[in-house]
View 1 (cartoon, helix red, strand yellow):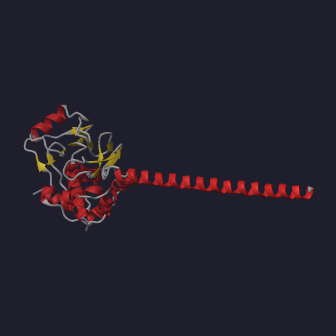
View 2 (view 1 turned 180 degrees about the vertical axis):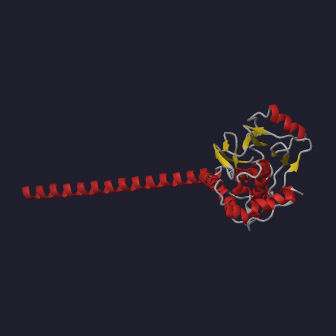
View 3 (view 1 turned 180 degrees about the horizontal axis):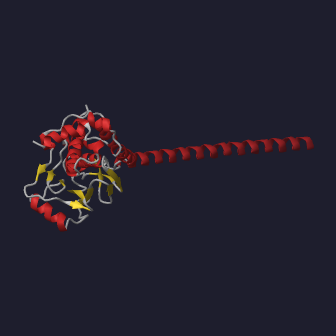
Length: 283
């Protein structure tokens, strides 16, 4: 009888252990299923967030890398550039007088962060001025999302500082990307802007107070839908649509500045691309 009881007890214990093991497996399966559901939910939420992310948000790494490349473009690239068109040449200001700062000819840029044509022109302006000096504080942005050529990748001069032995540069970004007031155009700068640009169009850039451009000097269509990486890659290829318009514009701006600096620095101002562009200035 004792043996029978021991056998029953052992059997019962075995049964309990099996039941416990079965419940453990069930708990494990439930936990695994719950984790799988959570993972799926997270994936769905992330997918929704990514798909709804504003398309006009610029890629920080792309913009920073593009700016670094733009500021260090080799002289050989500009010598391979197509010749500028007459429309890219700054116009002579009738009655304009020399504009200087710290004894150097001054380039004055007036624009706005929302402005798509300012966005395009900054690429050429930075490329040209970087041949004479150094920028710090230039930041990346895009033009307005609700204007023509929306979300054009570009840079802002709002916090920029420029250093050069040959030329001075001042920029006034009058409105931000949302068309809210940003920087104030006043004093001598305002007087020049009102006198020679009564229509108030931007971008407006005067070179030394004697010449100026009103509007972009690059082809807007070449920038349509392009990213930072695509724009800088195009600028580095003189045969691309962007290269055919931006590199000649850089040479033309450079030539105009060289005219103000009396040909300094010589290695820039006597280069093949700049010399070719200078011919248009003398017509």
